[in-house]
Image (cartoon, rainbow over all chains, first blue to last red; front, side, top):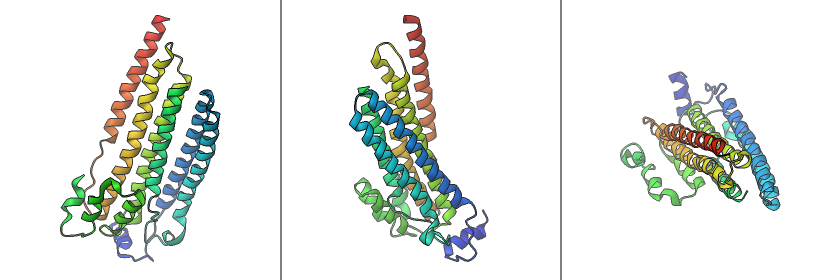
Length: 117
Length: 147
Protein backbone atom coordinates (compact mmCIF):
# COMPACT_ATOMS: atom_id res chain seq x y z
CA UNK A 1 0.00 0.00 0.00
CA UNK A 2 1.76 3.11 -1.20
CA UNK A 3 0.92 6.61 0.04
CA UNK A 4 0.16 7.49 -3.56
CA UNK A 5 -2.67 5.01 -3.56
CA UNK A 6 -4.10 6.40 -0.34
CA UNK A 7 -4.12 9.88 -1.73
CA UNK A 8 -5.69 8.76 -4.97
CA UNK A 9 -8.59 7.30 -3.02
CA UNK A 10 -9.00 10.28 -0.76
CA UNK A 11 -8.84 12.99 -3.39
CA UNK A 12 -11.30 11.34 -5.75
CA UNK A 13 -8.72 10.88 -8.50
CA UNK A 14 -10.30 7.72 -9.77
CA UNK A 15 -8.24 7.07 -12.88
CA UNK A 16 -5.09 6.08 -11.01
CA UNK A 17 -6.81 4.00 -8.42
CA UNK A 18 -6.36 0.26 -8.52
CA UNK A 19 -8.08 -1.63 -5.74
CA UNK A 20 -6.04 -4.72 -6.58
CA UNK A 21 -7.47 -7.85 -5.08
CA UNK A 22 -8.80 -6.13 -1.97
CA UNK A 23 -12.28 -6.02 -3.43
CA UNK A 24 -12.17 -9.71 -4.34
CA UNK A 25 -10.95 -10.61 -0.85
CA UNK A 26 -13.84 -8.69 0.65
CA UNK A 27 -16.39 -10.30 -1.68
CA UNK A 28 -14.98 -13.72 -0.76
CA UNK A 29 -15.25 -12.84 2.93
CA UNK A 30 -18.97 -12.12 2.40
CA UNK A 31 -19.30 -15.46 0.60
CA UNK A 32 -17.68 -17.27 3.54
CA UNK A 33 -20.07 -15.50 5.88
CA UNK A 34 -22.99 -16.69 3.74
CA UNK A 35 -21.70 -20.26 3.92
CA UNK A 36 -21.33 -20.00 7.72
CA UNK A 37 -24.93 -18.84 7.84
CA UNK A 38 -26.04 -21.90 5.85
CA UNK A 39 -24.09 -24.21 8.16
CA UNK A 40 -25.63 -22.73 11.27
CA UNK A 41 -29.07 -22.94 9.64
CA UNK A 42 -28.76 -26.70 9.25
CA UNK A 43 -27.53 -27.04 12.85
CA UNK A 44 -30.46 -25.04 14.23
CA UNK A 45 -32.95 -26.95 12.07
CA UNK A 46 -31.51 -30.27 13.27
CA UNK A 47 -31.61 -29.19 16.92
CA UNK A 48 -35.16 -27.88 16.53
CA UNK A 49 -36.33 -31.19 15.03
CA UNK A 50 -34.72 -32.97 17.96
CA UNK A 51 -36.61 -30.69 20.36
CA UNK A 52 -39.88 -31.53 18.52
CA UNK A 53 -40.18 -27.98 17.26
CA UNK A 54 -40.79 -28.92 13.63
CA UNK A 55 -42.34 -25.59 12.64
CA UNK A 56 -39.36 -23.69 14.08
CA UNK A 57 -37.00 -26.04 12.24
CA UNK A 58 -38.61 -25.33 8.87
CA UNK A 59 -38.78 -21.58 9.53
CA UNK A 60 -35.13 -21.52 10.65
CA UNK A 61 -34.02 -23.46 7.57
CA UNK A 62 -35.88 -21.23 5.11
CA UNK A 63 -34.91 -18.02 6.92
CA UNK A 64 -31.20 -18.84 7.10
CA UNK A 65 -31.23 -19.85 3.43
CA UNK A 66 -32.76 -16.49 2.50
CA UNK A 67 -30.34 -14.62 4.76
CA UNK A 68 -27.38 -16.52 3.31
CA UNK A 69 -28.47 -15.47 -0.17
CA UNK A 70 -28.74 -11.84 1.00
CA UNK A 71 -25.28 -12.04 2.58
CA UNK A 72 -23.78 -13.48 -0.59
CA UNK A 73 -25.43 -10.72 -2.67
CA UNK A 74 -23.88 -8.13 -0.35
CA UNK A 75 -20.44 -9.34 -1.42
CA UNK A 76 -21.39 -9.16 -5.09
CA UNK A 77 -22.65 -5.60 -4.57
CA UNK A 78 -18.99 -4.61 -4.25
CA UNK A 79 -18.70 -4.95 -8.02
CA UNK A 80 -21.71 -2.77 -8.81
CA UNK A 81 -22.58 0.89 -9.09
CA UNK A 82 -20.21 3.48 -7.74
CA UNK A 83 -17.98 0.84 -6.24
CA UNK A 84 -16.90 -0.05 -9.76
CA UNK A 85 -14.38 2.74 -10.25
CA UNK A 86 -12.92 2.17 -6.80
CA UNK A 87 -13.08 5.86 -5.95
CA UNK A 88 -15.52 5.25 -3.16
CA UNK A 89 -15.96 2.24 -0.95
CA UNK A 90 -19.29 0.57 -1.35
CA UNK A 91 -21.64 1.87 1.27
CA UNK A 92 -24.74 -0.08 1.92
CA UNK A 93 -25.75 1.67 5.11
CA UNK A 94 -27.08 -0.81 7.60
CA UNK A 95 -25.71 -3.96 5.96
CA UNK A 96 -23.23 -4.68 8.75
CA UNK A 97 -25.73 -3.70 11.43
CA UNK A 98 -28.26 -5.99 9.80
CA UNK A 99 -25.79 -8.89 9.82
CA UNK A 100 -25.15 -8.30 13.53
CA UNK A 101 -28.89 -8.24 14.25
CA UNK A 102 -29.31 -11.51 12.36
CA UNK A 103 -26.41 -13.06 14.29
CA UNK A 104 -27.93 -11.98 17.61
CA UNK A 105 -31.29 -13.43 16.54
CA UNK A 106 -29.55 -16.69 15.61
CA UNK A 107 -27.83 -16.73 19.02
CA UNK A 108 -31.18 -16.23 20.74
CA UNK A 109 -32.92 -18.99 18.76
CA UNK A 110 -29.93 -21.28 19.35
CA UNK A 111 -30.18 -20.62 23.09
CA UNK A 112 -33.92 -21.39 23.15
CA UNK A 113 -33.49 -24.59 21.13
CA UNK A 114 -30.53 -25.69 23.27
CA UNK A 115 -32.48 -25.32 26.49
CA UNK A 116 -35.52 -27.12 25.04
CA UNK A 117 -33.72 -30.19 23.61
CA UNK B 1 -15.61 5.09 23.35
CA UNK B 2 -14.93 8.76 23.76
CA UNK B 3 -13.36 9.02 20.30
CA UNK B 4 -16.18 11.08 18.79
CA UNK B 5 -16.34 13.71 21.50
CA UNK B 6 -12.87 15.19 21.26
CA UNK B 7 -12.89 16.02 17.57
CA UNK B 8 -13.49 19.78 17.97
CA UNK B 9 -11.63 21.16 14.97
CA UNK B 10 -11.48 18.80 12.04
CA UNK B 11 -15.03 17.53 11.80
CA UNK B 12 -18.33 19.07 12.82
CA UNK B 13 -20.26 15.90 11.93
CA UNK B 14 -18.54 13.51 14.30
CA UNK B 15 -19.89 14.84 17.58
CA UNK B 16 -23.57 14.90 16.64
CA UNK B 17 -24.05 11.21 15.72
CA UNK B 18 -22.36 10.14 18.96
CA UNK B 19 -24.94 11.82 21.14
CA UNK B 20 -27.82 9.88 19.61
CA UNK B 21 -26.15 6.67 20.77
CA UNK B 22 -27.80 3.30 20.52
CA UNK B 23 -31.25 4.68 19.82
CA UNK B 24 -30.40 5.33 16.19
CA UNK B 25 -30.82 2.38 13.84
CA UNK B 26 -27.68 0.77 12.38
CA UNK B 27 -28.50 2.16 8.91
CA UNK B 28 -28.88 5.64 10.36
CA UNK B 29 -25.64 5.31 12.32
CA UNK B 30 -23.76 4.10 9.25
CA UNK B 31 -25.15 6.91 7.10
CA UNK B 32 -23.98 9.42 9.70
CA UNK B 33 -20.60 7.70 9.81
CA UNK B 34 -20.27 8.28 6.07
CA UNK B 35 -20.52 12.02 6.71
CA UNK B 36 -17.73 11.89 9.27
CA UNK B 37 -14.23 13.00 8.33
CA UNK B 38 -12.91 12.34 4.84
CA UNK B 39 -13.46 9.45 2.44
CA UNK B 40 -10.57 7.04 3.05
CA UNK B 41 -8.84 4.72 0.62
CA UNK B 42 -11.52 2.10 -0.12
CA UNK B 43 -9.06 -0.64 0.73
CA UNK B 44 -8.92 0.54 4.34
CA UNK B 45 -12.71 0.39 4.54
CA UNK B 46 -12.72 -3.04 2.93
CA UNK B 47 -10.03 -4.32 5.31
CA UNK B 48 -12.07 -3.06 8.25
CA UNK B 49 -15.15 -4.74 6.80
CA UNK B 50 -13.30 -8.04 6.33
CA UNK B 51 -12.12 -7.91 9.93
CA UNK B 52 -15.69 -7.38 11.05
CA UNK B 53 -16.87 -10.29 8.89
CA UNK B 54 -14.13 -12.54 10.30
CA UNK B 55 -15.24 -11.73 13.86
CA UNK B 56 -18.85 -12.30 12.86
CA UNK B 57 -17.97 -15.73 11.48
CA UNK B 58 -16.09 -16.49 14.70
CA UNK B 59 -19.24 -15.60 16.60
CA UNK B 60 -21.32 -17.86 14.32
CA UNK B 61 -18.79 -20.68 14.80
CA UNK B 62 -19.08 -20.34 18.60
CA UNK B 63 -22.88 -20.49 18.35
CA UNK B 64 -22.58 -23.55 16.08
CA UNK B 65 -20.22 -25.17 18.61
CA UNK B 66 -22.78 -24.50 21.34
CA UNK B 67 -25.55 -26.10 19.27
CA UNK B 68 -23.32 -29.10 18.55
CA UNK B 69 -22.46 -29.47 22.25
CA UNK B 70 -26.15 -29.38 23.13
CA UNK B 71 -26.97 -32.12 20.64
CA UNK B 72 -24.01 -34.45 20.86
CA UNK B 73 -22.77 -34.26 24.47
CA UNK B 74 -24.04 -37.24 26.42
CA UNK B 75 -23.69 -36.27 30.07
CA UNK B 76 -25.82 -38.07 32.58
CA UNK B 77 -27.92 -35.44 34.25
CA UNK B 78 -29.23 -34.22 30.90
CA UNK B 79 -28.95 -30.54 31.90
CA UNK B 80 -25.18 -30.73 32.46
CA UNK B 81 -24.46 -30.21 28.77
CA UNK B 82 -25.90 -26.69 29.17
CA UNK B 83 -22.80 -25.79 31.22
CA UNK B 84 -20.81 -26.12 28.00
CA UNK B 85 -23.45 -25.14 25.40
CA UNK B 86 -24.92 -21.96 26.90
CA UNK B 87 -21.61 -20.12 27.56
CA UNK B 88 -20.50 -20.89 23.98
CA UNK B 89 -23.67 -19.38 22.51
CA UNK B 90 -23.60 -16.37 24.86
CA UNK B 91 -19.93 -15.75 24.03
CA UNK B 92 -20.89 -15.85 20.33
CA UNK B 93 -23.63 -13.28 20.87
CA UNK B 94 -21.37 -10.96 22.88
CA UNK B 95 -18.60 -11.12 20.24
CA UNK B 96 -21.10 -10.47 17.44
CA UNK B 97 -22.24 -7.26 19.11
CA UNK B 98 -18.69 -6.24 20.09
CA UNK B 99 -17.42 -6.77 16.54
CA UNK B 100 -19.92 -4.21 15.27
CA UNK B 101 -18.93 -1.67 17.93
CA UNK B 102 -15.27 -2.25 17.08
CA UNK B 103 -15.93 -1.92 13.33
CA UNK B 104 -17.69 1.40 13.92
CA UNK B 105 -14.90 2.64 16.19
CA UNK B 106 -12.22 1.68 13.64
CA UNK B 107 -14.17 3.18 10.73
CA UNK B 108 -14.49 6.47 12.60
CA UNK B 109 -10.77 6.42 13.44
CA UNK B 110 -9.86 5.76 9.78
CA UNK B 111 -12.11 8.57 8.56
CA UNK B 112 -10.71 11.05 11.07
CA UNK B 113 -7.12 9.84 10.48
CA UNK B 114 -6.74 8.87 14.10
CA UNK B 115 -4.93 5.92 15.67
CA UNK B 116 -6.92 2.71 15.83
CA UNK B 117 -7.88 1.27 19.19
CA UNK B 118 -7.01 -2.26 20.20
CA UNK B 119 -10.01 -4.42 20.92
CA UNK B 120 -10.73 -6.46 24.04
CA UNK B 121 -12.28 -9.14 21.86
CA UNK B 122 -9.17 -11.39 21.43
CA UNK B 123 -8.72 -11.45 25.21
CA UNK B 124 -12.37 -12.34 25.85
CA UNK B 125 -12.34 -14.97 23.09
CA UNK B 126 -9.19 -16.61 24.48
CA UNK B 127 -10.36 -16.45 28.08
CA UNK B 128 -13.80 -17.73 27.17
CA UNK B 129 -12.51 -20.68 25.17
CA UNK B 130 -10.02 -21.65 27.91
CA UNK B 131 -12.69 -21.53 30.64
CA UNK B 132 -15.26 -23.44 28.57
CA UNK B 133 -12.66 -26.05 27.56
CA UNK B 134 -11.69 -26.52 31.23
CA UNK B 135 -15.35 -26.89 32.23
CA UNK B 136 -15.90 -29.40 29.42
CA UNK B 137 -12.81 -31.40 30.34
CA UNK B 138 -13.69 -31.51 34.06
CA UNK B 139 -17.28 -32.51 33.24
CA UNK B 140 -16.07 -35.30 30.95
CA UNK B 141 -13.70 -36.68 33.61
CA UNK B 142 -16.31 -36.54 36.39
CA UNK B 143 -18.86 -38.16 34.08
CA UNK B 144 -16.40 -40.96 33.33
CA UNK B 145 -15.61 -41.57 37.03
CA UNK B 146 -19.23 -41.55 38.24
CA UNK B 147 -20.57 -43.91 35.57
